[in-house]
Image (cartoon, rainbow, N blue to C red; front, side, top):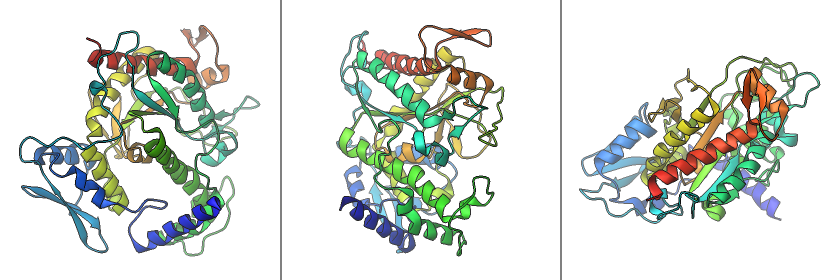
Length: 416
């Protein structure tokens, strides 16, 4: 019965996609919920965050800023708008949210600087039977395959007890390689048809081959994408926002560069690291009514004020402990923020729909010669030599760098 209801709900979302400018599997914007933020932000603060963090490449007429208020387009098709009134001088107190600022948690000891902090770990991707579908899988010869979803889960399992020992409450956005969403790719076939129709593919193929250059024009490929990149992340967000309600989400990922054929991958010499927080929405993203609503909601929540100093501090510690150089983006999808050289603002679904501060880690390159060798070595006690350097297991190094970075940041603002 539940599955039948969810399937009908998915079909309803497909109808929404046709009726309004809403992302596939997106939620209909609930603009009245933003009434609680009336007069909680000055014009200068709103404009600064919009132009320097969230909509750094412009927002056309979707947001019109006046002296006393901003007019934000709600539904472009219906030509309705939401009016946000600015605070005149001292903003009234921010309305209650489920997450708490770390500097408002009270004092803590040096040994337990995370006392009372509620942290949710989000191990990126799924792994297991889903790894090839996610295109987060490659294999060199007869060695064990590399699956990002399995790697991030291993890091999360090591990290959780470290954070608890420092005083944090820890929960998981997903458990091992089990999807959080109850839906599966076949449930999205009709929505996939609508997605393809919107981009001009009116007679799509049902299936695709692995090496098919036009596989994105098939119903199966689009259905799979809607499953693991949209539905799965949105269901994790529902779990985080409605059940776990943490003060902070740590999204754990491993980076990679193009590896070509996953059965005969290219290994490279480059290794690097960066951290992402929410921001840098592109003009063709905020034209969607739901994305624009989620951007404004996040801006008004002031999550950025918590994310930036935390990401900056944790990235600095991570770089010191791992020796990884910063990744340099060559696309215009991000905005470099902070002072560490490692932090970027980017509009990822996970950083947008989790309603609390989110720090998104992208360390190591899975298909680098060093990264691959360390992944193949698995987890182990002590250190082993790689390229002339003694290193902890890649999983323990990752977990320790995060734990140390978060602990040092909390000590800096919570320990007298």
